[in-house]
Amino acid sequence: QVQLVESGGGLVQAGGSLRLSCAASGSILGIDAMDWYRQAPGKQRELVAGLSSGGSTNYADSVKGRFTISRDSAKNTVYLQMNSLKVEDTAVYYCNARGLLATMRFFERWGQGTLVTVSS
Image (cartoon, rainbow, N blue to C red; front, side, top):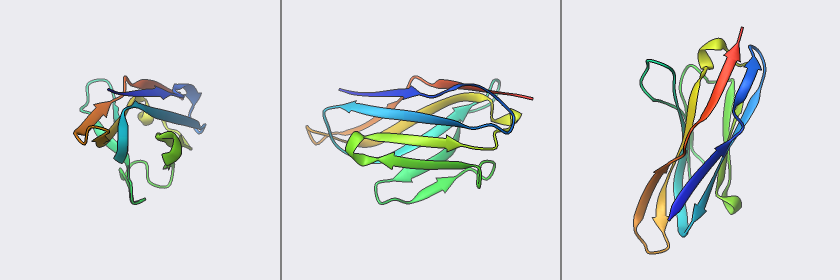
């Protein structure tokens, strides 16, 4: 029904930048919110940045001023621009989307995750 495909992860040196993308496809009537989470080894998954359909954003304190979430609604795609990356940003990053299917049923989906590794 709905699939999320993430891309953009990789290896970068501390201080560098990466941009993650997450594209939603399927029988989607509308997307209410798209968020980015991350999970580092041995740690719980945490919310990194969220973006509602109304344009409201929220960020984890640890990434404020460095990460920016944005969305192309026409493409059902959300982006995460990550600047001034730190070693502690190393994690698997997951996209989450919530909204309505064409059948008027609610959906929530997770992407497969993309690995971001920041070296010192």
